[in-house]
Image 1 (cartoon, rainbow, N blue to C red):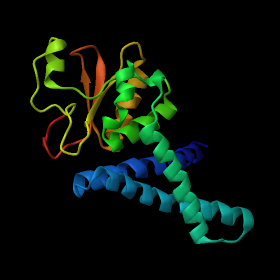
Image 2 (image 1 turned 60 degrees about the vertical axis):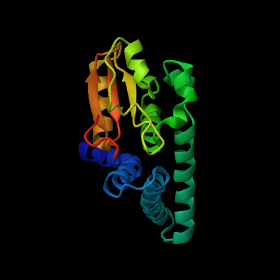
Image 3 (image 1 turned 90 degrees about the horizontal axis):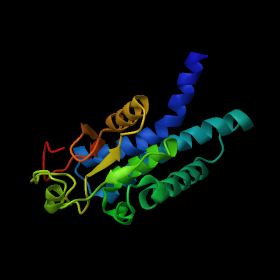
Length: 209
């Protein structure tokens, strides 16, 4: 029973993992444009879903069916899912409306990964995203020269903050584990309130978090 459960979890989670980890691979290894990275992850996931469709279709009908049709169906499913995740963020998942308004300024890979975990944890709250040096002084903190909350040469912000206070240790641990497993940098911060800092590497500031 446990083995079956593990297989089922892996079967369900692999498309999400491949979509995001695939995009991060193209970002970190090949330094491709954000849209190309997302497209790369989308194509990898499309092939995986097509295999799923072929397998289940074969088990039900006893025939393989059209591979081209399965690829088209898979691409449509992944494409619709990705578009929704890239461009939609509910007001329930942000600390204030400015974050929702600036959602598209966040790097697409970080957007997609955050939208994905929100589907499993709808109470997740983003407390901050893009900043300028003056924002740190307003919070009573020293300004940072290499913050990934600043807009990078990619045209996007590479970091977000997620609320951790008034949430259980287990839930916060799982959220941090999810982003770490997907390939993001994570830090527990207490500077302007307890939060989880999540960032995507930037070629502008190697080693910055």
